[in-house]
Length: 638
Image 1 (cartoon, one colour):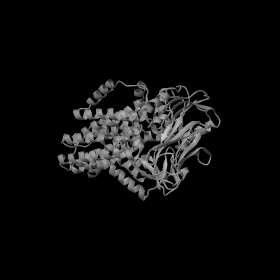
Image 2 (cartoon, rainbow, N blue to C red):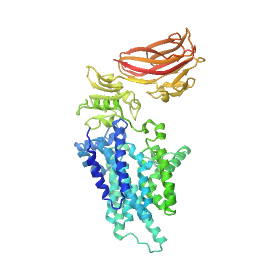
Image 3 (cartoon, one colour):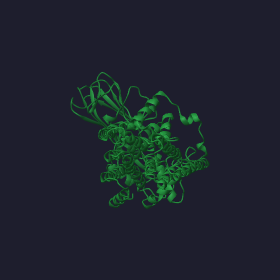
Image 4 (tube, one colour):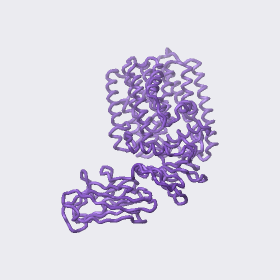
């Protein structure tokens, strides 16, 4: 892992921002703090294996392979559903512009820091636009700082690396240089926007329409006294339209030639299916975009024209990421929302508007931003990444991989091993088996099927024909090497436990529909504080799971429990099996093995001679006493 000298990075960043004239010191520091904090958070997500093949892994491949002579290669999932080159998906000259930065610091961290800087810099342009729109610089400052706290900005930064994250910078440059009447910088800004990817064409054309409509509106409003755009700027905009169209159709030809399977969709397929539930979600999406801005964008809809193409797409599409704030797509429309809000603010007294804006931004940032207590409870992927000692050991284990070796890795591990010649999450059928397979059996991504095949399915496919031995084990984070028969390096034995705050409640057991890595508790078993209560009035399964894959080895299950009374009868039982295939251990616990009210411990050991695809630990209550279960733990025995 390459490291950066923080002091040098900080100094260079500060010097870059200072070139923007008229930016107040507090905003400069706000931008710097944003870059540092978000760079650290997104880097920690990568370090903690919380980034994914789509899309950080893809861009790591694109940059690394392009730098090493395999231009624009990216095919993490081999097969017809994925092209052999990124040019089959997007044509992005911007990647070439960013390549020198990656060449200096060849690391995925470089891409994450570049993205953060690109998302932070529009704050300076928003301030400049605000000053030109409103005489009150304080209000412009609130808007600029608010952009850095805007949930749409933070979510775009949070979710891996994407080309869409560079659109706010170029959009804000277009707005600013248009209002400053700087023809050449405006044209340059348009070309930078087009360089992002070919579909930026519709944003660029929407900006051209906005400029002409706004000029016509101002001329009508000011009865001919308004200074219109110069003939040179009009000619420049016409050239931009021509270049945009030529660039788009050329890009389409390139993409279709590289990836013929992408095909073309009918209008109905492109627009998707609109239904009532989707409409409610889409209305909520627009609400989440405008609420932080105190709904001011609705008071000046003209400035929303550049956002109309993707707003329309979000309204008519059935593809949920287009109308979900937790993806990268808010970056496509965030700047027009801020500019329209600043124009809307001109209709109010700036002091009162400033207070409303500050309150709305604060509330929405606290409630709806990634890493906040509310969002963290909704998804484990939205909690702040916190590395631990096992994370460090996992990263150290990856260092055992030969740089020239071929590697198969699951979705959330792939970005960490993508800087090599041969790396996949779905192995090519015509390739020799990989030299290494990297998995984490305690991670749901090991079991998830992206498009064609889960990593678990691929692993068992190779195990049926090849010899793979474990060389590293960090609590289920396994590195397997082809034709390896030596001792495995057990840094942390595999272990897991039933977490009372994470159990899934079910009434009927449909095992084939359950999520792996989870324990399940039926509704007839109560969760009371720090324990499960197996009632004396009912007998039957009390918990089951976690449906994890385990390698050959010896394991021990420990259960801590207490009884309401002493009895000579059986009170609960333990079993470990692969459902409908094999039983590995069974044990019955009797009511005279511990005194009432005292916490006792019972253990059961078992052994597996082969890999088990879905190990299940089941607890059964017999209804002869109230049983309080405080913990259920499984440990790999060395």
